[in-house]
Length: 244
Image 1 (cartoon, rainbow, N blue to C red):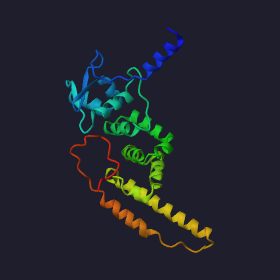
Image 2: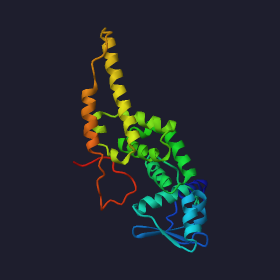
Image 3: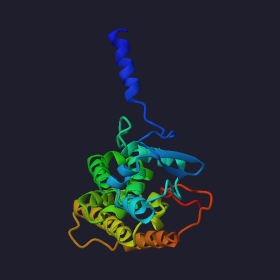
Image 4: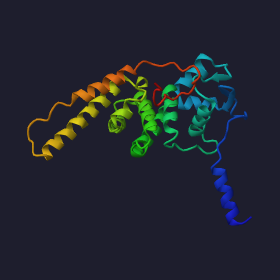
């Protein structure tokens, strides 16, 4: 075998992640989602999650199976690949971080939450280029640490979205205080821009009121804050917008 062949084999091996479809002597606990089963090390889940520590070793110590509701098999598989060294742990990316953080919040996986928050803080600008991902990440962060500096950055990024695009986002999935902060920053941005224009035009007097358009936008958005039911949508992630 040449050095090139060996290198290619290493690359292939490193790019492959387990599908957790078969039990092993150390991975005997079954996680079910939809019509698929995944086999994991229950002890490792307990190390990451006080929720699973309580559920699997205190409340139901003889249980051999746990069903994850409201999540697709593909989502559960992505989570397992991102939290398990088997043999390689899949890295967090712009595409999967909101999913992993949503699961981490749900199951109280504090080490995973910390990893996700660190990734988001370092990649906030990249995340903001995709409004859907930015919204989903902000929803997940609002359930994790709503008072963090990372959350402030995400709110600022959301406030920078155009009003017509922002009003279509499914804000019912986000805590009201976070939504209010987005509104406040959006209004402040509008005031600052108008003040700057008036100053540039040589008018030092107070800027005219700017609340009219903002009120219309806020009213429209609050009308959307009722939670829609999606009986066929089992995804753990919130929808990014509402179909009128």
